[in-house]
Image 1 (cartoon, rainbow, N blue to C red):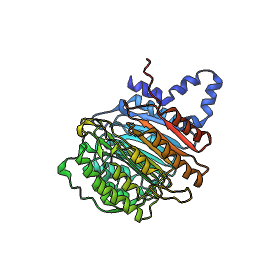
Image 2 (image 1 turned 90 degrees about the vertical axis):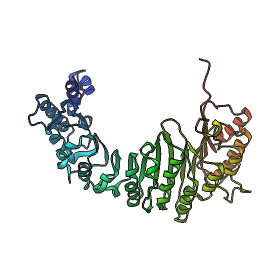
Image 3 (image 1 turned 180 degrees about the vertical axis):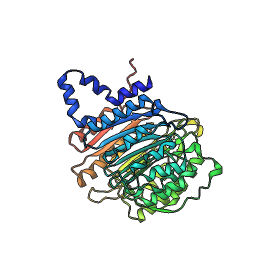
Image 4 (image 1 turned 30 degrees about the vertical axis):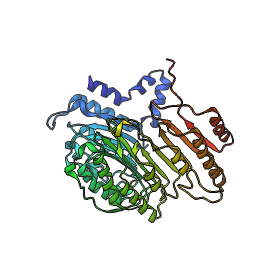
Length: 448
């Protein structure tokens, strides 16, 4: 059944249903190459425990259909997706012959089949996007596979799940966007070294806390200079507290000359455990960035526990910041006294408001802030929120009259409330004048 379904999917699947509507539609599908530029093949139905010498009859059918699908696409660039376990390589031989037309590939591979991809080496003139997953970690085999992409002149994106050390021969300096998932202790050193090799790209990394223990610390990471457009670190796993704080602190310490535009730190722990901001290292990190004349424009701290004083001290070193996202943190067993961690208060909003006597002279914290987003338990007053918005609108209107100030308010579940009608009217007047973009979560309807 699995083989039959895969044969139908490779033959066109839903496209075949449409082609049977009438002869005219069938002819359109036959002569329109753009309909056949996405090729997906899953060879798990033909998996064998040992290398297979004889070609199963149904696999012959796969090769014929694959060849037909590739031919129907003419000379147009291809998007290729393949799941490859151990099987006879005849289908791979057909697929890899089309590599000069590959623009995007997504492979989930058994490392034992990697030698059958060698034909793509030096035959990837159009390739831009690569996504790689592996069924097991055979470092020599993975290095070979990644080395096959070494001469891909248009390569710009890599989404990779595997050991970082296997990227040794991958053309990482070409990348505009790189994403790596589940970084463990053995991956951090080569990952930091990658940061030093790349420039003007977007790096997204998922730090797996469950892979670490106290025995792994200190990490003794190398020092690197880094000039990226964007760095996003997502922290996953169930551990938190001091361990995550120390790991993040060592990462910040290792990046000696950061010149970045966007920085995102995201807590995505499995059980909602908090991630604490490593302030001494984080502050020093931003101070080094300022000394390097970095133009950090976006700072997003998702569910990161940072105090008001820590945040304000960091923001003092970000004169070019335009977009800020911060959060309170809901009550939980991991927090002291099981009370929420509150960051967004009247005091913080007053500090974030421009303290210039008139709009002509920019000063204060984040003087050109154009977007403020926060998730909150609502321990601020409506009056001070409107005061903050009013001052920011005045600065924004004077210096960037084509762009309204933006404010987004998101409630932590269980803490939503309405703003007073008078204050909503004031904010509405700014919006009517084109001076403000204000979004606030609507309260859930409990009437059901």
